[in-house]
Image 1 (cartoon, helix red, strand yellow):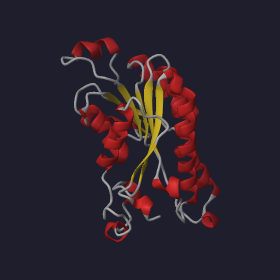
Image 2: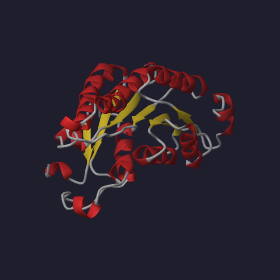
Image 3: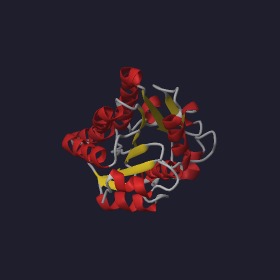
Image 4: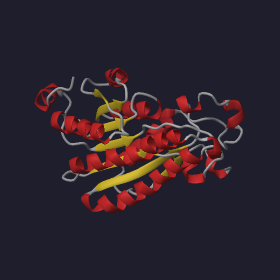
Length: 253
């Protein structure tokens, strides 16, 4: 349950938190690590997942007592708008938005089903477009920062991941273009492009084998990506930037 803003304010004993951060895909992997780090920095966090219980369970583990979890399918426009309506009415204006929700349906293009193509593009690309559009009205008056989570594959490409790569490459172009559109309103938009990170998406990969292809010799941890996200959220003079967090993997691709 989201508490009204006046009740929340009365509970604050150490001053107001700096920003309200909304993290899509915040119940696991990189999104969860971002939510944890934002909470540690005394930002209030709204954790969003397709699963309400998972979102709230994550919110309940964050430091502090003012974090909430909500359910939303970002590929559905009406759900995205309803979610932001709820957030702004009960929590106030959004200062940070992190788009960490994503899926993959890896296969050679000749074997990729059309429905899988649509699912990947709707979630990874269209979903982030919808959340960004929905949050802008909340940020127009006070500024804000958006970080989209892309992929090194979107920068370099990879056989067997053409659709996933397309969704992330599109997200990179979208990020740069949106950064130009909203910079005059003090809204910054950046992208973090992780490499092989220890998440559900890489659970089936042999780290010892794949780690040999990475100059740093290992997979990354979600927390290492989260620090890059926080850096971009809190850096007031960076926008339109793509930051690779991949242990040097792009050097070998």
